[in-house]
Amino acid sequence: MISITFSAFSFLKSKLKEKGIESLSNSKMEIPENITVYGLIEFLGLEEDDVEAAFVNHKIMPLDTPLKEGDKVALVPPGGIPNHVAAYVGKNNR
Image 1 (cartoon, rainbow, N blue to C red):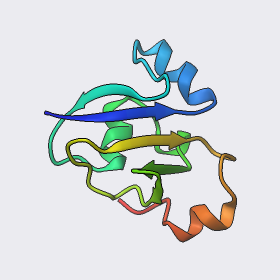
Image 2: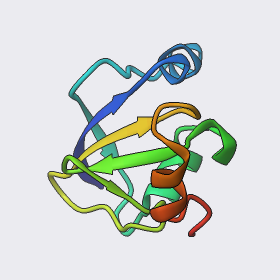
Image 3: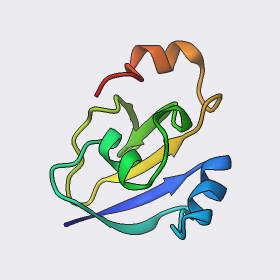
């Protein structure tokens, strides 16, 4: 397992809370090693369509970005960033 700092925005907070997952800003979370952002979405029990983009260490990154120890990850729901930015980072990359 690795440790990340995790945040989620908008309705993702309530979806995660229903699953018993704390998603307040900058929560520490243990996740499996060798996981991507897309894998984190699955690990959290969210659907791919629930997440438009992800920030990893304060940069918008594709969903196929591997996560590592100490990363800061924030998930953004649809409508959270401009469409051209989501397209640029390859929302459907896995």
